[in-house]
Length: 200
Image (tube, rainbow, N blue to C red; front, side, top):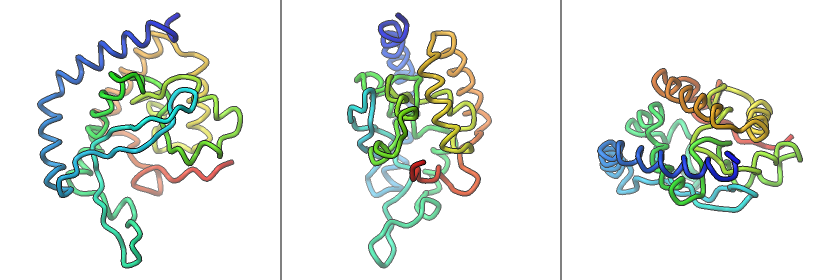
């Protein structure tokens, strides 16, 4: 009952309230990133949602579009702007996803939506992460985020699919708040962002 009906009602209500509360911060970050990224404050990318339905995720743009002499994008470390680095470390880059929650593409809590190119790389068990809507934060994020392996991350995602409940979502929401305050697990052990998933 909660997973099918009540969760969506809570998602819409809390996303709307959070967006209203954070609107002053939203505007300030938008202006700072617009200046830092030549007018491009948002990052929009196609991601798979529930049942692998494709939608466009919205985030604040923490990296610029600088390329090397061959026209290839520079590494994540070289493209993160000072403002973008702050926005990423404080998780402010996630705020625009509240719009995705209001639209119904995402939930507040759920497996993080990853790249469309990863879809054919999942094994059957890992693919179960798409049985529910993706979330802004989730069980994997509060248990290591970018600091854990892909296998462990997918294990946490599928566990959440099987154990989703109101009390678990409240627990994840609170743990997320503590993670944001402490700025834990923003980067992996070898990269500024999580390494690319290359399959099993």
